[in-house]
Length: 247
Image 1 (spheres, rainbow, N blue to C red):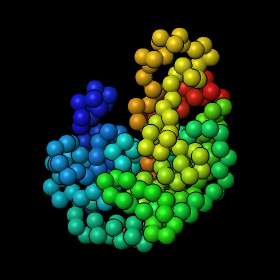
Image 2: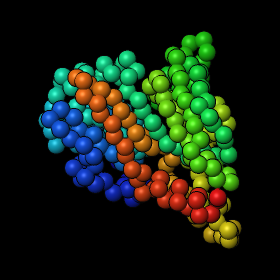
Image 3: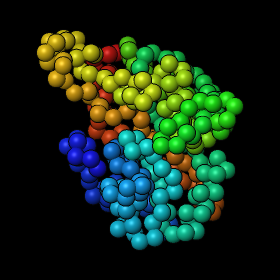
Image 4: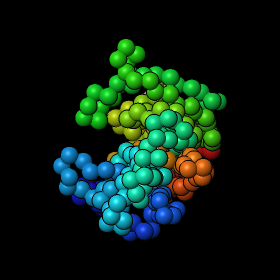
């Protein structure tokens, strides 16, 4: 992790991240600011390395963006990795994310079906001619005066899919500067505003974009699995403050 991120986040023990484990599978609640897999530089802490220290044959079955928190599936053997990978490829893994977006938006099973082109270097765009099929269903969960908590169900699994699909609806995730999402400051939502001098020094409530992998369910070898990951502290704090000051 970069030094600035280290100051914002203290990484817990890998064992403390585990929400389920059996002979074949480990399910964790991934904290923000930690990559799922090795990057090209190979220098930073990531979930794959930590998982392998815990269990030598561990393999991460999918990935979350570095800033995204929530459920991550880790296979403990090659056969489980193969079976889970097949379920992902056949789109039989049901994934639910929660996000806080700017503005008040009424989404009722809104299907966004816009192809995504991966341009490399973690850059993607909507491209109807050359992009790959990408579908996400959105539902509003909770309304605030200036923000909305939404449920996001990606049917496909493209890079930045939820983030860019929300941006196309003029509903960027708060704090997601890549897609013009603005951070949330307490002074913006509090009944009594800060002075301008204080406001200029103020840090946002969340120091990342507000996206959390909340729930997943799937079946392998005839066994049904379903897992839910509680909000991490920063996401829970944002929702709590919106309920208190922006409802």
